[in-house]
Image 1 (spheres, rainbow over the protein chains, first blue to last red):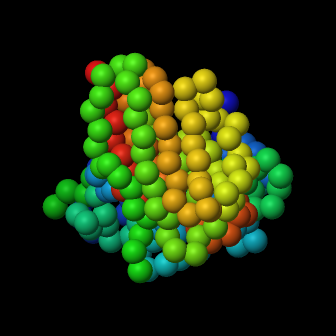
Image 2: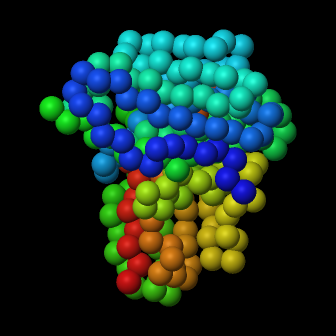
Length: 115
Length: 115
């Protein structure tokens, strides 16, 4: 059973535009929601993460929006640049709940920024 | 500071042959993870070590996969015998702590092709 659903599978955005990737989770024990960025031939790297005590977290051009009641969270990339072209994974885990510490990843979104 | 080191980066073998992957985590990181990443998918946890102890190996196919982390530092993941369906990227990650909310740092992965 897939516990983290991610959409869209692929996304093409014009340079300077806003890229939005969405994720939904099922396990209410999850309380840590990171986004990872992966370039071809590289391992995933943490981009930004949020915990459910806040509804939004911003770091530079990257923002996570979190809706606890809907069990959804999303990544917004403002002023998207060609260097942002990569695959993005959302993930979720329970910090201290036995059996939920495993980081569960979404299926990924391939983002392409065109000039 | 050096990141997570993995070797080899690429491996091509024939089915039924054995193969081994090596991982050196970031210095001081007590927790080490092995993930499997199929093409177009997110990483899936195979095994998690806290120091020398495998604390979560529930997703490791124990009939053909084995892993060890001697002295709580380097780790080796072995497949014997390899099957066609094992073709994937094997990622190693490490984190300082053991909770589900710890930042995981990934290596570049070993890309395995089984012919």
